[in-house]
Image 1 (cartoon, rainbow, N blue to C red):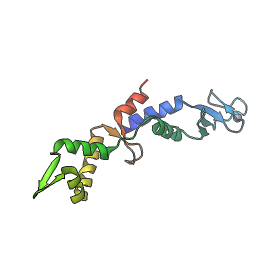
Image 2: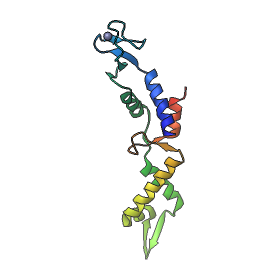
Image 3: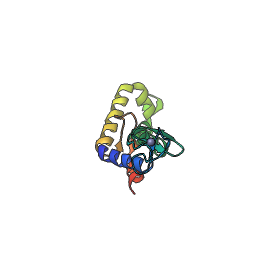
Image 4: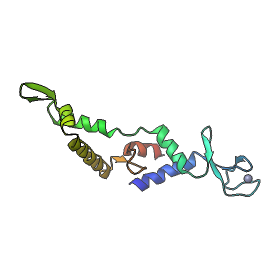
Length: 146
Ligand SMILES: [Zn+2]
């Protein structure tokens, strides 16, 4: 799943950039420089930059066109749907989720981590940086499908 989407993103990055000879300082649409014959070319994205490789363009597309999924937020919303809004302890009434988070943060974190790995294994979310940032699989699909 991940590598398939990564491939699509890379393809998109190629489509949105042009080969560029830095020595002669011009675009080389054919893939090698008409002036010096070099095929050791950078990739140019108009108005953004010019660098070797394609990875930086993939990163740029991810950062500018997609919204990272806020799992903490969506997990909390999900939990709020599962449990009563407030919980009575003695004569006091507390917000259930706040109480849980405050009283056992370790348990909360581990449930969140489990939720994250479920979402990932079900293909709902996808990460291209080893779990640092997650994106909605649908969003990536929409972006990369012609
Ligand atoms: Zn050249």
